[in-house]
Length: 548
Picture (cartoon, rainbow, N blue to C red):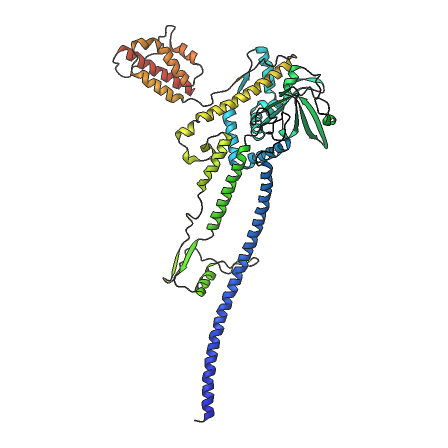
């Protein structure tokens, strides 16, 4: 063989090896390029998510700054020197901010809204009766109470809701008592609930800080701002219309006409004795309601993030290329403005792989706090609103006792609220009657009686069963004359109102039963026979009357 031929063969073999190596390198480069393209798409998708998260974070940051400014406004006490020399009262600007937050919370926060509805239901749910023992006075009083406009504002079911909501969200109730219009007496006195935002100032008796004289009311009518001074209802009842506004020298320009025909009744709750303004019941619950909302929002965000991972795949000994390939196969290929390039498998598909891959469902349990941990915040809201915690939605801790009764402190709290409204209705009713009678009576003379139904209905069935069981055994001879009174106890426990009428139809003047006796079992003694049959007859009559 010639030397050139050998050289050519050797060169061909070397060249073939180089071409093979080059092809392998090209194939590897092609795989790397494809992986790079997939990674670029993944990075683009992650970049868009990060950009969206950045916008959300910026929004949350701005919201947090607003919350901090508001918190700085409401944190602690913005104390001022009041007219009494004490430094423990909110000024009018603070009150406006507090009321705005309380009103929004009452509309927006579910727990605060439900707590206020519960309070309204327990206080006014069974109604209230306002009357007068004097027939002539009662006729005028009922005309005042039944007036359609008065019912909408104060004296009807809608008015009661307005009163309790205003009291809870502002701590103050201002009622305009309209006795005349354009100088002419009205046929039926009118009452109007004034929003707290319209009352800008209170002028007190210079010699008695507990005696308010005038209220400055500012309201918008059309494009005009109207400033009016209204006397307090107590000052109006005293009839001293010669009193002038005791304004400080720097406020003489605020002097104006006094609306003597429209006195204002002011009742407040919360705060302290020397404070001009009351404090909303909702106010102590605001911070905890916001914390509760934030807790639930964060919890929902964590659950949402955990829910994005449905499957966990572990490659035993898998290299970076294999992991990248599996990731590219499983993740979405959706890009904004295009269609899905890597759709999910159809339902019911099978996954086939070697034992190198361990595939299992992603377990999120224990990775986040429990939603039940929010109970601590709810307890604070319930405490601020004076309602039991289980009534704000925790049905797990409710049982027969908590579902049918109130705890004693809560019951007494609602009774105190009813007493608060009794004094309010008494004052308004007495004013309305005196206006119609054209005579002003002494301020301490009450013409009105306010009666409330039982806050908690007695369990009449249980009481009847207990008494009946005791009477069915046997009545000793010395207790037989008391059978009528024992029956009275049963009827009262059953919740019947016409007890005396039932007793007159069941017993004669001597206390002997008139209802026909029905013997069920052979009696052991005459006394037992009489007690059992009489008891059965009474129970039948009770059930008949209750069903009627």
